Length: 329
Ligand SMILES: Cc1ncc(COP(=O)(O)O)c(C=O)c1O
Image (cartoon, rainbow, N blue to C red):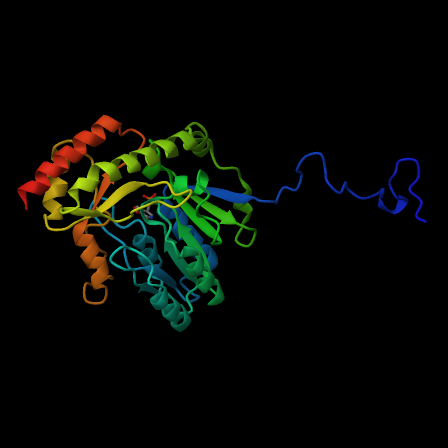
């Protein structure tokens, strides 16, 4: 029989750490290293350099990336700046990944990086499958969460299928700037990765009640869904129901007949901050090669659901939208 001694611990185990410590002490368990940058696009560019995108196979991106004179292209400018090889995989008119096209392009191109974008905060229902396909083809998977900060941080609905994720703080919180690179796992750490993010990032993430903001955004999206249902002859929501944990950045709809650019202009003139993500595709996504992307880009209108939008203001906004749409039908 084994001797357990006075303490009840076998002598051959006394030198070991506890089987279960009183508190978690493994510094790398469940860790996501966070590196700060001025904007998400800077984080993306730095990560592409780090993993050698320009020299080692380029990047495969979704064929729905916009451009504007004021903002450039947050996703595509870094790819262009590096002179990297690129290709696009198809998306459908409802902005879902065309998984077949993705699989075929992954196998043909063997890109160094596969980019997934969680548009408007809603991860694609197939994004985990897409990430798995990317990994099988040898790609490093990056999740662009410029719109999905809350789906990641509050809903845990995305951000962990890839080796890296990107946040854009100023897109989702009332701060002037802030891009974060999140590294899942140790593979792409550098000496600088270990520096704690600066005070401005801690302030942005720590001083806002993310859960309450997420709740407000969800309530606003639900309210809009109800308010817009009588307008089915004029428009269609792009996302009908949200999946658990998904927190919208905006409420995207497609207009059936009314000219989107005019509706956009008039809504903004009336004081309702709608956007069109994206109204203009980057040149590299041609209408001939990607007709579905251009179909959507001509029709999409994103209604605000952010934390500053009150229920009364949403009612007013839908009233204004209704009057405008009626005048075009
Ligand atoms: C999907 C997406 N990713 C990334 C970006 C870039 O964000 P940032 O302005 O922080 O560089 C944008 C916006 O430009 C975006 O819409």
